[in-house]
Image (cartoon, rainbow, N blue to C red; front, side, top):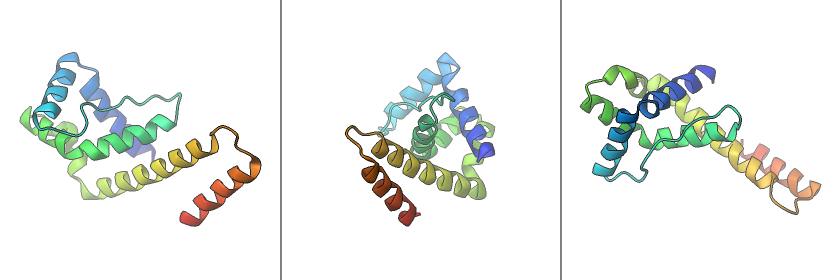
Length: 127
């Protein structure tokens, strides 16, 4: 999972770390009427952010490829065109989304141990 995470973080940082590129990317998403207006930052402090970042990049992958092709920087996103890498990326995105959902359910207010155990059993039977 680490190589996939590193590639996604590098891609997001390429977009977000340069002010002009970030603004151009947001303008591009607006011009193509994307459902989302930006990519999310990944922070090591909260592992929940990895699932959110993966999910957002997955949903924007076609727009990201189009943006970098338009800027003639297709090397920046070549992994988004590699089917083997995309299958790993899709798997980890799905896994992290399920883990995030489980974590949120377990952190709700007034959760008793039997509720948490039920959430864990449901999660294990789905996987």
